[in-house]
Length: 202
Image 1 (cartoon, one colour):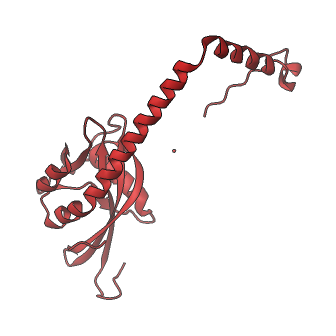
Image 2 (image 1 turned 180 degrees about the vertical axis):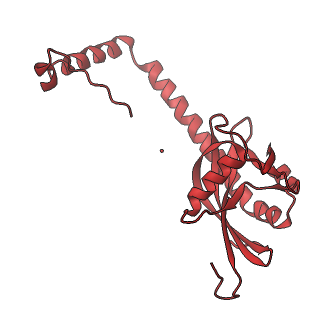
Image 3 (image 1 turned 120 degrees about the horizontal axis):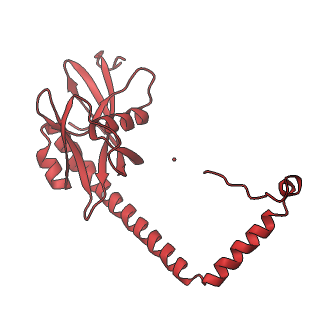
């Protein structure tokens, strides 16, 4: 792809500002093996690949984590080997435990506070980008954590208030209803079916 304004080739890439839950949210930075630089997890799009899918793939390969994707944070643009590189970033959250090994290009991963992450990044344009979008992403991460905690607390309170007898009565009614389905009539009363249920920075 060529930039029509400059005539220079474009490199399209994508990545994530990835948070991991804990006592305090922590952001992933990765160390590249070839030049020992600490960078944000990201990489080039494959042919025909959408930016968001590339971002999720690159984050998995470079941090080992599957992620949930939240708001788009922006893009940074900079020169790279005589070309223009445009990297789009999304706010992401690590899900569960590591799901895979790190790709061979990555030597290590650190989970740091926003301030530590900015200080650790090797490249100036990434420091500037994270300093700008990091506070927005951090605020959103904290809000999501509060919502998750509130939802869990509400669920626990509802479960505690439900009388055991009422729960048992509902189960009996459900079984009775299931035994009168057309399926049950045809197959001797076995009517219970189960179902297994996803900016330009200088």
